[in-house]
Image (cartoon, rainbow, N blue to C red; front, side):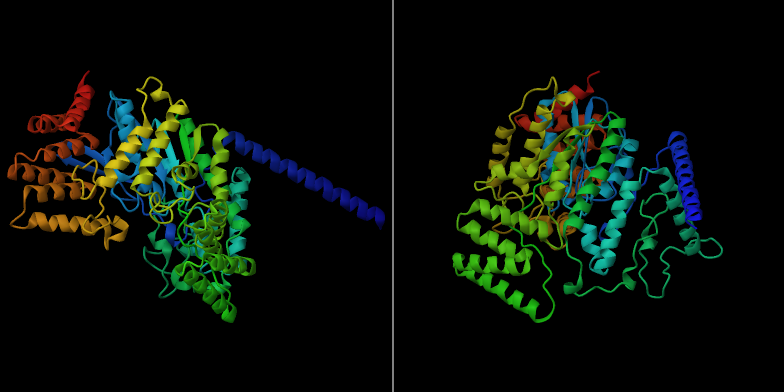
Length: 619
């Protein structure tokens, strides 16, 4: 019997060896003779992150002749010429809402500020820093966008300012999925990342997906109609997906109508598994972007974004009486702060942290320490609260560390710790609302600081186009621009400076604080322009609003009307020149710039615009 078992064991062993060898041969053959699959799905997308292709939209104007691209995913930053013009330097910025400039128009966001700084360093080139930042994008969407970047244009540099949204999807689906299911999906996604380079794994996964898609299509093999749901009344998110364009496959997107939200006390909580997922997913996806850029000879600058410390985190209370008691004690801690009894507030917050590990208690502890002058301890608890929040909208420390660890990745020009720069700019090292106006979105001064430090880093890292450039003093520029902003009491009508905020009250209000946002602002300008009493200034503002709504033809008409009503409103010509140049109409932009200078011969800014266009027109 023992002999037979030994013989069987040997047979199984050699069978396993033979099978392993055969699979290795097949894998080696696939590696040698097939291209690496471009797998866009290392994570799933939940409702918060479903894309709405395309990346850009083509637009044309025939008089004057323009062919420009507008972003297909976001809004409120300038379009750019479809054909890259000669004597230009093009930079693509990828990221989420913090890169996009959420709350302001494009001129106030750091990509535009970078463009202004670099233009001073390279006066013989047209600097074009194109902002592809989009609200709610994580590294997964950035990879989707990067796969299309080089079909649009060649690029001299890619800047990635991202990391805030790596946990957004997990925070979404744990609202609906049991903790065990939530953890299982997260582990599967991490396993997919590990096995992605294995061609056999990819082949088997493709076969399984094809089989599942065939079964979902029905016996005739015809996919369900767009908008159809597999269950009556179900909200099938697959209806929003575009085959061949949208990288989100039909599975495993969820039907929200079929899902029931879990009570908060029963939901999965963020912890080491999720933090590891966020860090590894960032490295995985951004590593692919860097490799793609390197294949095109484009360096990549990776920036770890700055969070805001002073935004209340979110925690899930326990169920029943224990949760009610926790909420009551948190409210008591807040009242102690209102009463300036900081020592008692600290004691109570420490008790709640020890008993519950609640992120809100950590935040209140940080506040009490901060107001008592214990800044180092306060910063530690601000960080811990940020790490532990259940709906993370600020970069968690694991992702911050993952970004900086990519400094040696081939193709990375440099990595930057923007959080450290923001802390250096703060008197006590705590990042407050003066630099980040909510939880993660830079203020106007924050965007200025980001631009100054990025340009400074480009010089330090030896970015090739700057090798013979004029040296800049970013700190002097930063101080001057900050002073200008702090003195500003009304909206700036210069198209390249308009930040979009409302200055009607004592404090300027960001677009995110205006009901309806930019659409409300634009509607107000259109209403004033349509009035029988409309002034030249009303029409100028209408042109500005139309430009940031990507209706350049209508914007040009508005500025033309403005000049007809008031030939001395020279800014209308300057705005027209700027709009034409960024949209690719240099010759018409040059004519408009000459009109602006003839109208206001002592305006140095108009003279600089004209000088640039004249240099670009030289052969």
